[in-house]
Image (cartoon, rainbow, N blue to C red; front, top):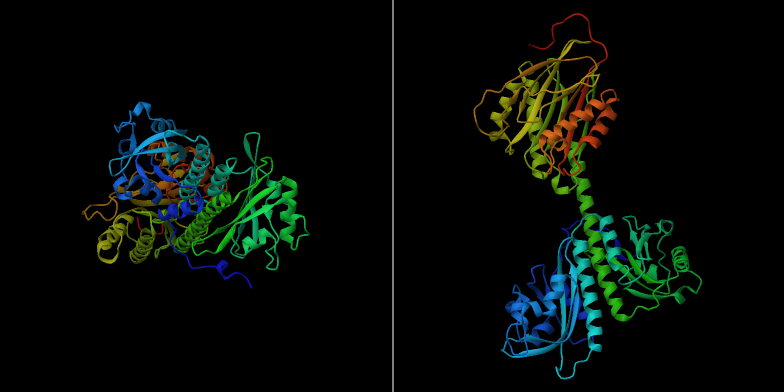
Length: 587
């Protein structure tokens, strides 16, 4: 029977790192070491001390957390605060390196001094900052044992690896990026090979990462990556067992001397043969509810050492943290797809109108929480004119998406009811109704009418409620922003006379309505964004309309803008009537 822990579970909130995890880790990594441990943040302040450290210092965590470690603990042998310039631990912290000392003196809560042997090792917090992990053990100042420093140094390096792994995995929701960070942390500090296998929602296995450390560099071995045979429930081989729910397992080369009992075991035997690994650890990647999501294998080939039980516990803990990162990334991706699908369903299909080409694009924000208020609309009015709308509700969340739907439907109703009215009058009615029948607060939009008899000539009448101006691109690449018709954004509560604007639309010209995600950048001005949009639109003037929109978004949209984008484009026919005709809709 399949392991029920692997079945799909209802979405939950992504799990946040629990400080208690560090206590559990110490209990697993320090079974035979009588040592205290404290952790410093980037400002050299204590953010964690383990129970053994509290016992040795005769001080509680509540007394120490948040204090400057040097001021609180580091002493000269006469009991005075150690000079900062002469403190080995402080100098190691400032340099972001490692230091060990045979004898240092720490202040105890009862006023006495504790002679200790200690090691301080830096750990990476982010690209610019480091903290430190200090491991200390009571020493006889008359008989320093230098061999003890080697043990403490190895321990601090393992703790630093766990701390850096936690930071690296919890600072991204991109699964591929999380796995890249993971393998660059464990290689070469722990092994020279790292492999990640993942189970998908259909319980199919894929080897997503195989990396090797050699000659000072980490390289992907893509030929060893790809789909894997299914997990065989009868298999007694280590990888199958781990994927079925077994605990972290130590593997030797001799493990695969027997005939493989399944397809996945055969692939794993070939992996060991081709990589030369002689010792490895396979750890399960578990999600929030302990379901197995995959496996992490770390192995040694060039390194002659075999993994020992303490390293087994270390890899197990790293695998547990990696599993939570994978689970969070998958939850985030499901939520992002759900929200994006919901918003796409709120947006309308393109109407078919003789003589006019129309297309639209909606690009969701990179983050699920940022999907929200951008929308477009195209529909035929009761008097035969074509309505074009682009809008943006202030805000970037599900509330903004719901408010967007309210405004779109309200505008459609008013535009149909008052089909012959100028765009400004329709938008004014919408603005006055918002406080009474909508939860929306503020929004911008352009509401435009494309008017003209069949075959043209065509003209555009529009009004803008605080929205970026439409862009008109002629067939020969001339561009102009239609900056007339600007009025206040919706929802201000101020009585105002909204303006209308009118322009002729040349044959084969393209009209582009867009939201501010196309032009805004945290690093550049809006003027720069508008100039880039116009320049790229001009270069694409004669491309088919669908290609025009796709390439305009890919080329002009600022790379550092994390807002969603809505864009609608309309292209006029190649030929219009030669005689002037009165538009079908009122002037």
